[in-house]
Image (tube, rainbow, N blue to C red; front, side):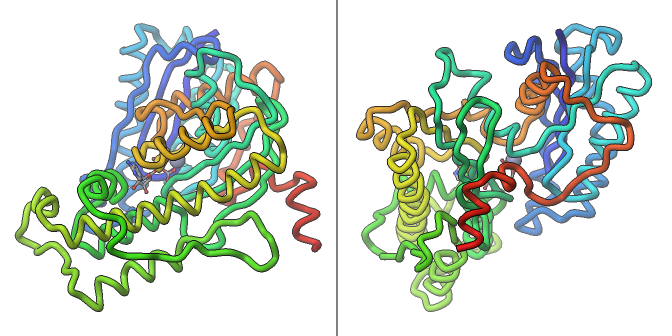
Length: 358
Ligand code: KG4
Ligand code: ZN
């Protein structure tokens, strides 16, 4: 059973061929980082144009690497949202035309569900439930309670910036380049987090939501006030490694991001007595975050699991894997499928609803 996965929700064009929802035969990712780098963030118009030129070669590449032709594909799974409307449309239209031409089922996948299912593809052991699943990426920071592998109840989400967005904006202000996460991750390891102290936000209504804009503003203010100075236009990005002011700020920022995430997950893990903690999404590639969640898992005596670094950032193998579960449940979409830019996963669950009415 072969699924062709297609992902184009933000700034990566990706296609993958996955067998039986688990065995990745190919996973081709065309990154647009170089295109968006001068702007310090994703420019939606440029992203959709680039998806348009990349989608054909990327899908071809995925089939070639898997050693199969289109006639071998049993279904097409595609990201229907959330994401950038123009970007989503390119992948969705391409997926629909393949499903139509080949007369195979079309499977509409939520991008966040894809991130979460990346952990399931790679786990050698069956994952114990209930589980807390944290998705931390450039566009999202959301925490779900999973009673089984395919049920999601949203417990909390960011009220402002996503964690990865805060990384990207701080890096931009420091003149470090895009995407900011991997750069600040590296610099933070060279700095002293105790030089600055940033507060961890708390909500008076007891909500399990997240917030990163206060932290981001505090870091940006520290840069504005000095003595921290952004990297000069003519300096190579590596020059930042010699700058203790930048490294210390990166370390303090990162420690606070990790603390915010850890505090929420620990609270929910205890409240629901979960058997597993799953952390996925681009920011799950962060080394300090992985180490700290690993430690939390040991303290709570439950496994804390992450997809590999390649499957943490946007890719189509995770979409194909999530599509496989839908295929088994016969949750097929028709060719009238439209993109949906909003976050919906787990919103209808009773936990979120009761909280909203408090
Ligand atoms: O999941 P992803 O590829 O795309 C979205 O769905 O948003 O996540 C991209 C985000 C970017 O904000 C990037 O800066 C962040 O993930 N990121 C990291 C690291 N690697 C990528 N953040 C912190 N540490 C990293 N090592
Ligand atoms: Zn993503």
